[in-house]
Amino acid sequence: MVGFEVTGIAQKEAWAANVVPDVEQVRPGLWSIPVPMPDNPLRYVLVYAFESNSGITLVDAGWDTDEAWTALNEGIARAGGSMSDVTGVVVTHIHPDHYGLAGRIRDVSGAWIGLHPADAELLEGRYVETDELVARMQDLLTLSGVPDELSPDLATASMQVRSMVHMAVPDRLIEDDDLIGIDGWDLKAIWTPGHSPGHLCLVDPTARLVISGDHVLPRITPNISMHSQQFPNPLGSYLESLVKIGHFEQDEVLPGHEYRFRGLQARTEQLIAHHEERLFEIETHLRDHPGLTSWELTMRLTWSRPVSEIPSFMQRMANGETLAHLVLLEYRGRVLREGDAPARFSLLDS
Image 1 (cartoon, rainbow, N blue to C red):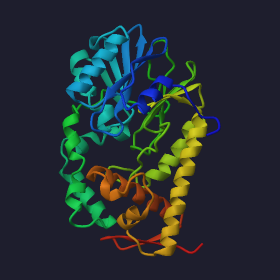
Image 2: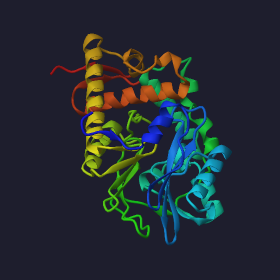
Image 3: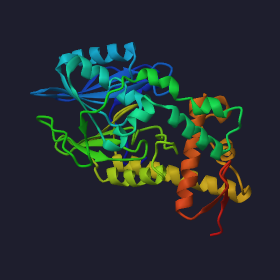
């Protein structure tokens, strides 16, 4: 990819060796701390620790397991501090691997927790009172045409990760363009909805870095799914957010997973092209087989592994991605939806 360069060389080598990378000092006063995610293809989440005169501010936290907690404490110690020095946690989005430990950190250190309001308003329904969430997911699976024998497992597939979240209402609501307010840093929030409604990236034009969370990753395509807690057109929002963050080209991108890189605009353009190719693939299937359901399309599309061979939660994510592409094609006036139990999609004449 022209304009793209891996800068986290040791991180990429660790990825290739299937091991968790080491703690690294990225800049003076800025540390990258890998927090492990056992039995997960993402392997670890990268937590970033910013030092200042008033203490340590973390970006993201890892999920709430003893192994993750130990790794995070050891990483902060490698940076010369301790958990009691943490004064704030900026959470890029509410998924468990980024938000899960934030409450436990606050309990120990008294740190504030910051989150975009679009994600903050989803916390109760996602991690506390979940009956409505499961019921709405069941409705979405019915609309998608998921077979009856698979639907119950897919509807409840995310409930197992609730144990990896220490529920905590945020102390700060961080809006688009807000300054984070860390002494010695010019860190600013950029709202980039898509992967979640309230996903935040962070930009420091003085240090010339971008923290991209899960919005832009160097190797994989972030999951953009239709979901009962999503915006009506999540893929449309994501593509607009890619264009938005691509204008903030800096010297280095610090992602939530995998490894650091340079060439933000090149990578965002590649991600946009990937989704356009997927949209074309869906149109091709609908041209040849009008009236397919989202699930039927999911089973026909090209994936890294057959959908039938992946766990229930990943099957649900795959269907959610397909449905998100279909919804975008509806917004573009390219497909027609008929029915709702299940919905069937056909290509409209050009």
